[in-house]
Image 1: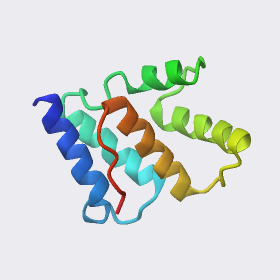
Image 2 (image 1 turned 90 degrees about the vertical axis):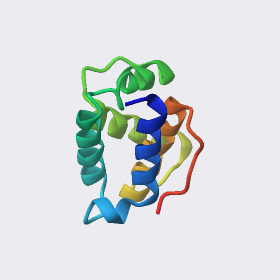
Image 3 (image 1 turned 135 degrees about the vertical axis):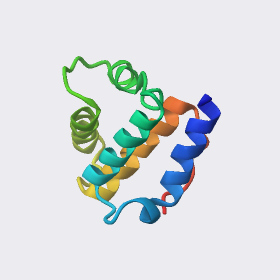
Length: 108
């Protein structure tokens, strides 16, 4: 599978969340993206963890789900963002879009 095909699948998921998961919750979105990553031979999220570590100049032993949450909490504290699941999901997708260099598409 090519990078373009993987990003196309990611963008489709992002714009059709309700077709793939029951509740629009962070933990369910992470679980789906992890499964999608496995289905893409672990190439979809390849380098994403390292991207976050470099972007925020942090060191962390944590996996993507916890790393994104921890980074989001820092953003909430420093930028006055409200700490809620909807903002956390948007933060995750913004990071993924930046990592992929993908066009930001609205979340539905």
